[in-house]
Image 1 (spheres, helix red, strand yellow):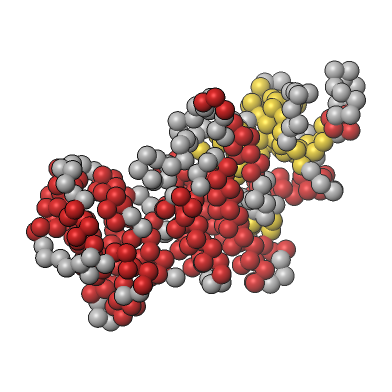
Image 2 (cartoon, helix red, strand yellow):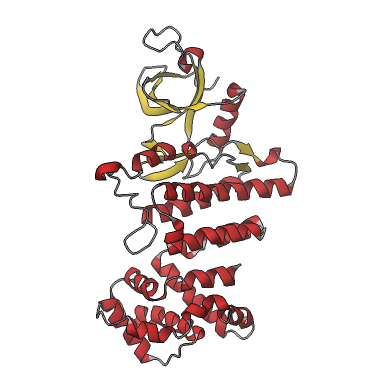
Length: 377
């Protein structure tokens, strides 16, 4: 059995209904301590078979987003008088042994939930989820993109996870969000349609889980414009039954998951498509649709709202005054494309590209997300 070269010790806390136990792993040959570890329980029927399968599949899924297990083992502590008579450890449990992680996502969410009387959980890396200017926290933006890309690489190796709706399958370790317990083999499925379905389900389950986590922490997507656009886009993409590769490409390319520079690059891309006579019909039809009615006569509202004399507003006004723009939606796209180009030429006085992106969201919030939704799907 895997683990025959190890000795181990685990801790038991009778006050906690645990999904994993902390402990230590030792080399059997010399008793030297190897690692602080966590023993993650394997539940369900045929736990012995499942433990072996999940261990080998997770070990095979060599990727930065996967926490690699050391071993799998069966533990039965029936002779310890300190254990309550009904504890599962007396009956015995199968578990997978991983490097010790700080929390799984399930436990972290409980800790991070808003508390009464103003008591707050101090995790400056991951909280708040939404920044003061309505952006997704950098940790989560990077973590989501890395998770999706990593799971896609797992798929390319013939595996799928299968249980990414369980928050206990996500763990925080060394300021990273990783996954554990890879369960599925694509080779075991009967058809390409089944394989495609399971792969898309993995990606959808990541996003569903994080949506639930964000909402449980008080970030209501219906009052957070960018977040709302993103999850609505994911839902629409699923109903269109895009192929797996297209679905992944559209999701990871959404503005919600992009850096400021890449968000601004999208305006450049779409303006190029609008002015390319061979492909511009679709973009022009999109801009003429009723969804963009709120951005008609955009220049009047813009000029009325740039009187604060901030560096960004001064820069944006300067670019506007340099060109000739009507209130047409097409000219808004052209203006935002020019804003990006002027910044790279002589916009450092405005601050960083992050500042420019914030200025665009302040004055034209939702415009980029509508463009992406209507042009990309």
